[in-house]
Length: 115
Image (cartoon, rainbow, N blue to C red):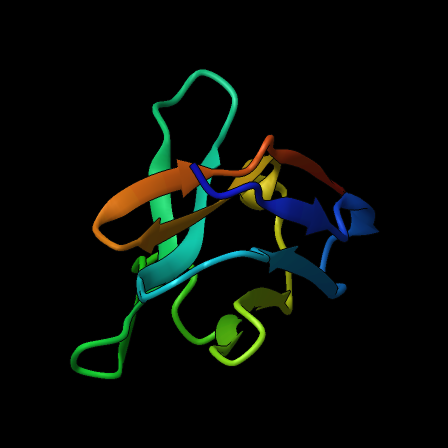
């Protein structure tokens, strides 16, 4: 299993910006990278994900146009740039990666949006 190192969570005011980053050293062949989140009282949901075989990025409807996913495949780093955040974005954000067909998850980083 790949060890993922997340950073960048914290407290941000509504309307502000925050960037989450995740490094995955030791990967061999990354199939997908992205971020999920679990908001209070809800199930874990996908926020944004990148699929390498077709070089595509998809976003949840709730974040499209506000969040941007960037990847550095050479370094196995995936970042989530969050703009114009809202209170509904509060939650624990999890990095995930699929390497050689096997998924791995980060430990989660808390994002709290204050209104």
